[in-house]
Length: 138
Picture 1 (tube, rainbow, N blue to C red):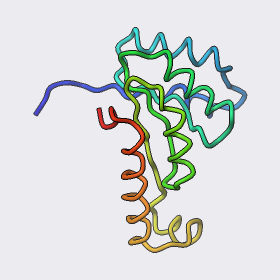
Picture 2: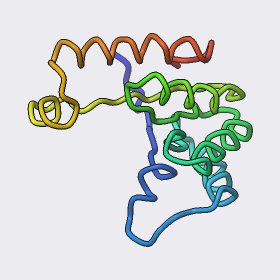
Picture 3: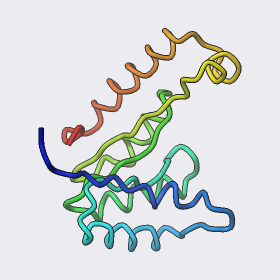
C-alpha cells in the first residue's frame, strides 16, 4: 500500500454552493492555478451540464492546468457525461467524476428505478466517461 495522500479539491464546484457566493470564470481559473501551485492532485472544476458558465469554466481550467488532473462532475446520464467529456477534451489530465443517488428513497421516489438499473446506469456512465480522455483514470 502506498503512503501517498491524494488531494481532491472541490472548491471550484462545491464552494459555490454557499448562499450568495459565486465566482466568475476568470476567478475560477486563477484559483485553479493557485490550487495547482499548492500541489492539489485533482481539481474538480465544475458541473458542466448545470450551465454554460460552468461548462466554460471547466474548458478554461482544462487549458490552464498542466500538472493536476482536472475533473468535471456528471450524473450517470449520457448527456451529462458527454458534456463533461467535451469540456475536458483539452485537459492534459482529465477525469469525469460520475455520481448517482443510491438510497432506497432516491431510487424509489426520485429516480423511479431498481437498484439493478441504478448499477447498470453507473457502469454505463463510467464506460462512457473512459472513452473521452486517454489520460482518464490517473
